[in-house]
Image (cartoon, rainbow, N blue to C red; front, top):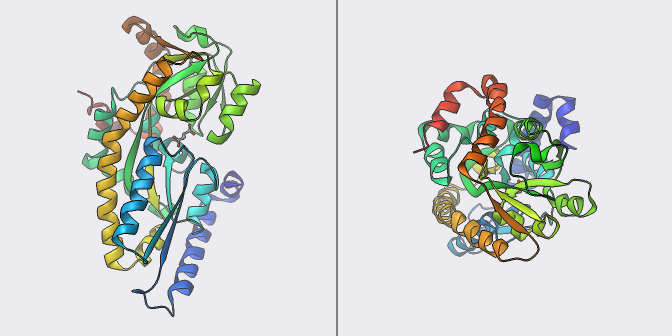
Length: 341
Ligand code: LMR
């Protein structure tokens, strides 16, 4: 649906969305005393409650409702219960929901700048990502999509991505001919093509079944998503490559956000700062715990690669950088790269 709307004309679609939200906000708030009004924040997402995003969203709900009893009601819908990510982008722009935390990769049709996060082997670890995101250049990305109807309030981490496949992949050549489920990202598409795989863009909620039925053979994701969504049951080999970053833009509709009374907006922003620190500090630990559960599962095998083997993967994926550096911008790539130790 989002693609169809975007095909009709990106700017027309978003303008319509913003106008509609403006209308709803002005109609809804009119006669009521804002100090008595209940503000409902619908917050759907696609991962399980125990994941870094699931835990951080729940903590936001708890703290927001405790601070504003009877004034703020946060409704978190995990596990694609309410909608998938594509639909949530559209629903946020139209004011049907109020908050999202969608993978940065999935914004790539709206801005080429976010593609920097998908460049393979760009970040050495989550601390490096953190340094980049909290740098002046990184922070400008939070407001990059305001005109499209997305005000970024924070970056939330999941973790580093690993490959899962029906066979052990020690070299990129081992991936030749495999069908890989990927997120909606042209950079990830190019990355899979660079290793001779066939990329298939697919919603997160459909991945387990696609792997089970053989519609796709392989996938990439974090330990936490692989564990909590049970991909390991249908992926006999998990390769510890840490080849890319998976994180989220926590975003609200700018018109909705500015319609909140000042005390509520300021209070929620403080809570978001607090839960972001908490969740981002926990994300590495959650992924580590899930890695160790996967390591002791008899349904799958974790394949660790030597430094030399990993260099083979880096070399194979290097052309992706050249392919996208013009669109992303060399300055942005350099700012991200220089955040590594
Ligand atoms: C994916 O589609 O694999 C991820 O974006 C899921 C998520 O939200 O972590």
